Structures are given as structure tokens and as C-alpha cells.
Image 1 (cartoon, helix red, strand yellow):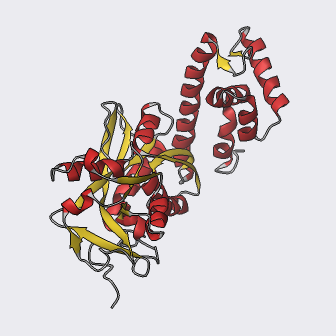
Image 2: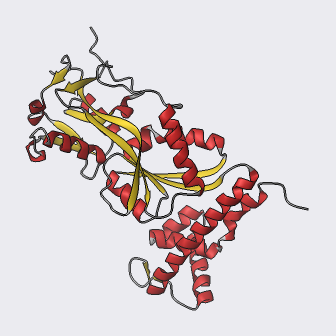
Image 3: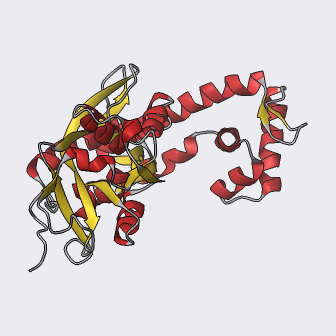
Length: 330
């Protein structure tokens, strides 16, 4: 008699040799301790599994002689096959999941900071409600870091804010965004509808770090107005939209931020004001990126299609503010 539907799907994660799972984790972190933490094992248990794998293959996979763990040439070769093997098993689990009427399995995503904080959580919540067997993971970083993660196949699908400067990936726009200039309520610009681009030369600017898609958009737009990046007074570089909002509120300067980052922020109006830049709109398209090659299949393809449909329809997404939505209070 066959097992009830779903039993095979739930157990397929164990099809990978457990020693290979442990090996991949140690190779990923180059640390027995960190691998043990990820796998909820003791460090001696991890060492035991690696030793057993090396004895089984009759080769040394990890060099433990120095202060840091290193992969041997044999270990580097095995890691490539272990990664491919795990990906194939995950694909098999996803394909077989369709027989139960529900997609399931791991879904590894990467997103630049703004998208990870303000856009993806709602979309993932809706997707997981439709596919409860999905086990998503999401790593965040700036645009350059996410592009690198996709190229290295550390994630199957990436979401970025800036241009993807790599020939190894495919890009697909999925959502419109606009960078807005925000100032403290007590700032001299707070009562103005807009400022001239030249005013930004002397302003204390709070910008994202280099490598950020948001930073690139601002610098490129201003360069078209004859304002070179070297002429800007960058008072501080910050690594997130939340940090910029807090710094602006504290009076440390003025900053540009995605309109999606202001969607539910009660500080817009009382503490933060949106000011236009005359003759300039800092518009952009958020992009989904994946490695060049065969089209996305399984969960990655399913999620990509869901995102395209949901964002086109505005499904479950509160409309963010635009210029003119945060006029000063009288």
C-alpha cells in the first residue's frame, strides 16, 4: 500500500548523504564550529562525519594543519559535485511535489537591502500561503553582492535595485521605484516643494555605501545634470534605508530613499518631509536576476511568475508615497 501523499516529499531531503551535507557546510564556512551551529550538531559530531567521509573516499578533503580550515584539491573537486548533487535532489523534490498538488522544497533567494526589507516579505507571505511546503531562505546585501551570489549560484533568484553589471546573468524588470529626497522637518528646505539640482552640491548628503544600486541611481542622474560625484558633499555613508531615515530625522543631513521604504513610516509628515528636485525624477525598475542558461524551472520559476503577476496587479502591496504625498502640515 502506498504512503499517503506528501510523505515522500517530506523525506526527500534525507536522500543526500548526510556526510555530504556536513561536508558542504564545513566547506561553505571553512569552520567546523559554524557548520555545527548551522546543523544543530556538536563540533565533535561534525569532525566525526568529515573523518568518516575521508576514510570512505580514502583521501584528505580538508587541510586542518593551519589556523584556518582549507579545502584540499580533492575537497574542491568533491564540493563542486556535492553542490550539483544537492541541486539535482532539490529539483527532484520540487518536480515530485507537483503530484501532490503543492509545490514544495527549498527556495534560496537573494535581495538587495531595500527590496528585502520592504517588498519581498509581503510577496513571500502570499506565495507561502499558496505553497505551504515551500521553505524559503533570503539573504540580503547591496546590488553588487547579490549579483555575485547569483553568478556563484549561491541563490537561484536575485532581486536588485541597480543595474546588473554582469554578462553572466539575465535581468527582468518587475516593479517600478523612485528615489525621493527626504529632509528633517526643521530643515530650511522642509517648506519648499522642490530645490534646484545645484543646491545638492552644498547639502550634507547621507547616501548608501558604494556598490549600492540606490547610490548608482543618484550619482548617474546628477551627473547628467553636470554634477559630478566628486563635487557632492557626502557627510555619511550608511548601509540601509532605515539608517538613512534615522540619520535624516536626527538632523545629520538630507538623503535619498526608495519610496517603498516610506510606505508605512509614520515619520513622513511630522519628522520627515519629501522634497522634489527641479527637473529631475529619480526613477528606476527593480530587477529579478538569474544565471544565464536554461529557463528557471521548479520553485524558482514558479516564484518568478508569481512575483510578475502580483506586482503587475498590485496584489497585497500598499501604494507607496510619491512626490506631493507628504506636504508640510499647516
